[in-house]
Length: 258
Image 1 (cartoon, rainbow, N blue to C red):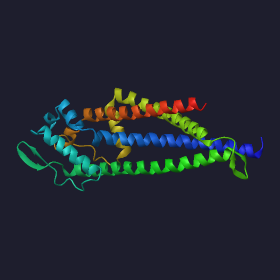
Image 2: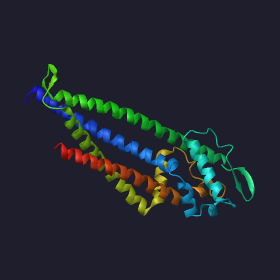
Image 3: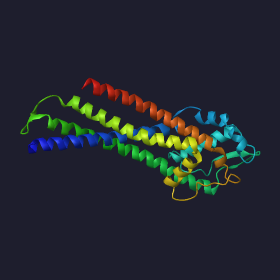
């Protein structure tokens, strides 16, 4: 094998790795967006969940469904950075209107806010990385297509079909890898969601502020595990649906450009 052929082979391998990374980053973007969709963009989702599980009955004291939805919306607005404090968030419990969140809950939600805003930053960085990788992959393929290394204008063929194949193949491999991981999480969650829920908090929080006392911290009474489980299922369904559509498009590209 000549030195030029060796370089082209190495470049082809790097293109496939870059395409795989693009696939992983795209799937991460989809997951973050699916989470934001459930939390913010599906009208009435939280009200429907609270009505389904009759959430107010679990609160220490008598509380209306409207107030349960209100404090959740305020909490989410705080977590995404649209409001700066939860000090003024009040709810009426047993006929008394007062601030809803305890100091421990507010400290925990400050951690949640950092995670939410961090995820938004990760999504933006991922988009920029994908753009950079796409440009690098395209020009690497174009260089491999040159018939004369000294004349970049002469190409054996258009680089676009190979560009599409490379991206489609990288995405499908990334999806398969993540689906295996996701399937493992689903199996664990179906058998013991509490274990998965606890592990999630251990991974994302470096303190125990998320461990709330239902006798004094009504947030844990409103945000029940059953609601979290439904949210996880809905987020996973949205993510899987969009991911499968992209996989079908990728398969069509591979077949068309075979």
